[in-house]
Image (tube, rainbow, N blue to C red; front, side, top):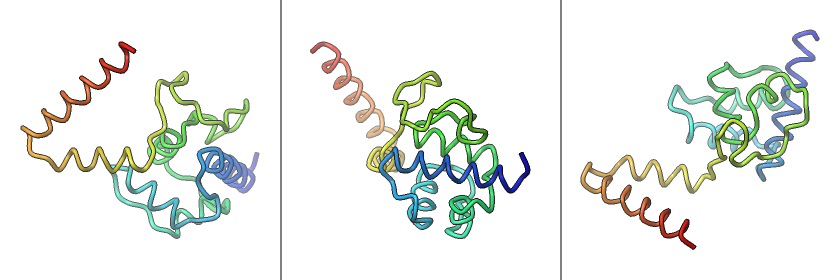
Length: 135
């Protein structure tokens, strides 16, 4: 497959994964914003997101892994295709679940707390998880 076809195929899989995760595949602004919330590295521009969506570029492996994790699809499928995996996996084979925007923002808020309050929040969450499993 030539590089132009690879980029176009990646774009189609990215758009499918976005749709399946209930995000618009037509908004590079939203893609860039949601990606940048989750990515620890250098943020991407709206222009870069647009290039991914229209098949002009493929993200680096590090960025591709983050997109796959966010959207709940295997990174290998997102990059190369193959077996149909365009549906969100939840806790699938790679053990990674998709985080919603609210979850990511909550984690960012947790990181802004001082160490004492972080520990309280962690213990509270662990308690809720234990209570939930006992149901």
